[in-house]
Image (tube, rainbow, N blue to C red; front, side, top):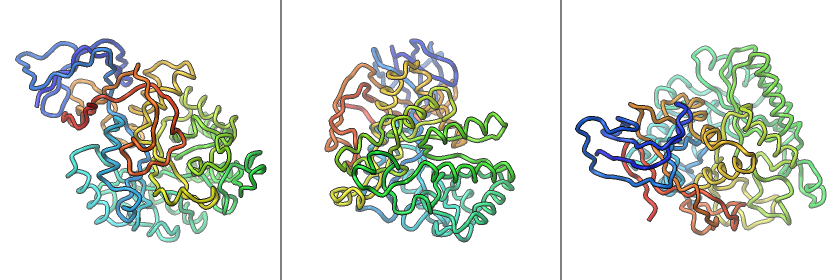
Length: 425
């Protein structure tokens, strides 16, 4: 299939391109940018006039809910949601049921995803058997099965000795380790940030020290072991400052934050809105602003959707009993554009946080559109305003705190490996 994308504004952060450019695709690859190669005859022409053509989005945290949680969502529904949001590559956390701790489970997930012929799925393997925090998994076998990194997801370690052994083993083989910085004892039973809103509403709280103490431990162990670490879902101003300092001292590491935390704070909980029950919790406006500033200056490498579809019945309960999480894979692009506009950032810088940077963290050849690159492409109308309506989301999970909010930027086409997998009618 040969495709000609014409008259669009190409933004390719990795290659420093932000200009009107045509893109030519053949055999799943970008064969030329600008002028058509000799003898090129397109089977399909996509008119991108007035639109932006960019690399397909790369999302570092999309829970597909398979295996084990099909009542919350299915692989089909969430992959459909991903491509509707322009996401062409995504990482799947290991907290399925059973967890992704055996090669057979990883291979099954990749096989199912490949047969759907939509976005590329990159499983993140479990660090410990059953995510129980006690015994390390066979990481080498999981890597051979297709895992790109290893994580404990939200589950705690039995103790710091297990974490140390995990980092030592991972460092030996060069496996990247993704960690949520949260002390389980300090976070136990908490559902909201330890601030004025939790106090006023009488909600069990999680202090910022739950993040900073755990982060301090991780950074010290990473320095001692030489492990490649990625801090997932940073949530506090103090956490951003610690990452900035660690990098200044030469520690090679990366980190991300969730798109919800770049826009919302504890004030948005209002009167017990269960859609604002997230993990980590929405913190103070100061923390939110520090995350936005960290994203702008590059301290925080990437934005992710932290997509967590939840069954409606699990949100229609009191706040403290609600299942944490929010759907977001379809909203990653417009909410990133909203952050960029409010922060006064160039569009290329904003797109870098959801394309080039997360691709580098995953260690995959994606997030760019140079000649020879895989033709994973998102085309969107940057001027189209639309209102987020939960019931209109393609994800099976309708749990979003942004319902009713007007945003700008709508995906019109998504291509994966040169195949048009989504076109807005």
